[in-house]
Image 1 (cartoon, rainbow, N blue to C red):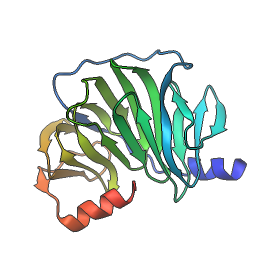
Image 2: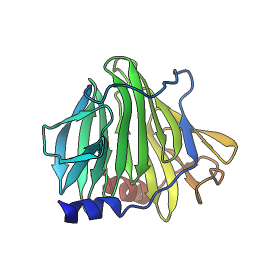
Image 3: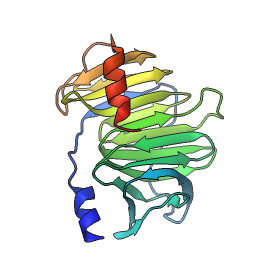
Length: 208
């Protein structure tokens, strides 16, 4: 356990980027830790969840709860279904905290490090779901996007739907097929640019 935990904590953190899909509600923290938010639907390697300073090893089918911080080890991947339709995949050395979640309503998640793929079908029932922390705030509906390290920078790429990215006092809008880079935490995002096939494959390979 100590060996896995040390790997999980050897992560590179990044902060200062904000992604927004306008028109959704903000939430405050405070949901009960015992509330079930979802479950692990696939796992490669090792992953843990930590709540109230207590860690547990995750396996396929295990529940994840409000208040959990889900952590992946080196060369590991985990996929979670959150609520009825949202699927979140984390690559290696990632940390995701479920700050607040209420089925059918929405909530707030915090990504502390590592790559993430967020996938919510366009036809799914609307939820006011926000992701924040590692790169600010993401409010999502019917969106599939990548966020995390890419080619030595922080990056966001939208595969379906749209998001707005705010960092360093600048906001840009991304639509499907477009990405942006943030040179370092707090830097302004680059203007939207279509990503080539090779870069898309490279980014998505970190969460598959």
